[in-house]
Length: 172
Image 1 (cartoon, rainbow, N blue to C red):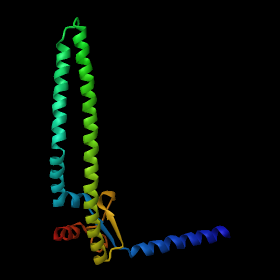
Image 2 (cartoon, rainbow, N blue to C red; image 1 turned 30 degrees about the vertical axis):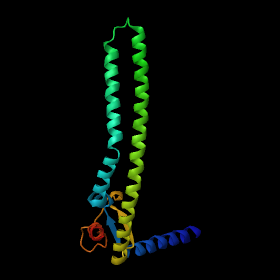
Image 3 (spheres, one colour; image 1 turned 120 degrees about the horizontal axis):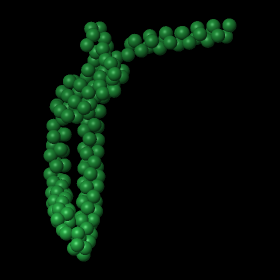
Image 4 (cartoon, rainbow, N blue to C red; image 1 turned 180 degrees about the horizontal axis):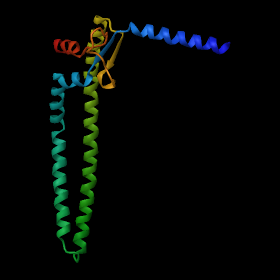
């Protein structure tokens, strides 16, 4: 008897949840498209490139000097031990400096990118919230997280809000 009651309660629970979800209005937003089309992204990409241009040039110069010393070492006769030792020491020091520059450049770039992406994502979130409240959307999902979407079928309450968000972002 207890099993029958539990099965009935479980059936009612499943049925009621389906009815509740049938009334949901779901919006879909393509965040990647909004980020890539944002003019602010192009601005900060060029700003970051300019900011790190000098560091990158310094790294390229050091790499070329390192390659030059490696070639020099390969051309030295094996009998010339003291010169080879000096060149190897120089190569090791240059390689260490190059690695340090690479790490510093990478960390600096990532830090700047995180700051800029956070600002852009915040701006997009405000636009998504505005569209969702205006259109009375209950749930907004990212397009990249969907496995399947039947948005194009008639009568469905799910729709793409990316163009509406783009209009809001361009208006600001």
